[in-house]
Image (tube, rainbow over all chains, first blue to last red; front, side):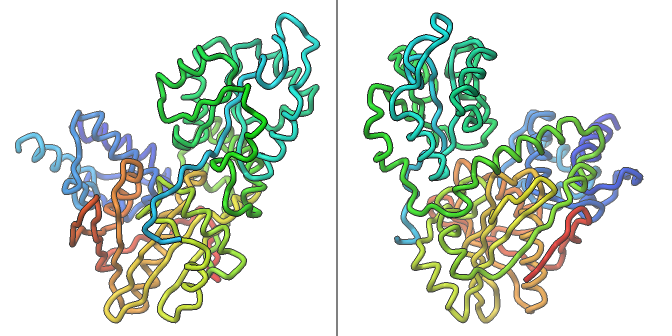
Length: 82
Length: 348
């Protein structure tokens, strides 16, 4: 759960055009609730790489792995177990 | 120029030493130092060409800036590093602040020790002995092919950026609110003849948010705006601090089944404002309305990973890979994000 909170906090703090009033649920599609720009995309990747000490390959960089807090966590679990 | 030709080496900023380089003598030993002959003309001419100036000097900040002010030159320098740190550290901070490549910096100093120290840390930086300034204005690396309206205003645009950055740093709320505060107006229009010099300049100067890094020459761009199956789009950004100028370019080839994006770029000066994705979203919606899928040529370099990630996060898939980092990306247009509400979009 702590992992989810870290990811959610990062997204809420860094995503442009995400409404302050909105509380992001783990299953919410972040790409539908805010606007993804290059800065955010890069920051999210850098955050995940640093925070969880992994390198993301081109194949990993799939929208479906990153479009919700839940999916990021699922992706990280798969990555660790592979 | 051939579209596949690699970029030529171009200097975007000169970093000056002060004592015995910009002026004769050592300021802390003699307050009455004089500018070196010809130096004012060099600085002003290069500024007119759109080449930036900065400073790396081991000196007293207050005294040195007062002296530059007295010479009427202080305004020409962006992010001056006047302190007692190693010059390589000063150069590194200047490079980060300007967000340009090390290879786009020229460092001018009279001291072989300082030049060696910088060269050792950053071999890409062009180090020049200040004894050799007579021919500096004729150095090919300092002569852009075109001097455009945007190049002449470049220093002012960077200065406006410093003000924006100050606002951003002092802003406590979420980033979206900060962006809204800027009151941005983003304009997308088909390129006309007057845009082409700037368009060529953008293909030469832009490295990070650039899908292919290919250089397009004026005559080639000219042919493309007259081609019935091509669209060349330019993007322009203004905000409450002023104009960023023309900062984006996209080249689309209309084919029977698809639109093929051969070139997509955004100036790194506007990287933090989210407009690259607005531009891309516009092209996606336009392709969808035309009933075509969108293909993108992408050549991965060591500098454009940010843009690659942006495309992947905009639901592009790799459908082909080739040599030298080439990939063909495809978007089936099933998911297109809404335009953000924090800026005004104008389509011409």
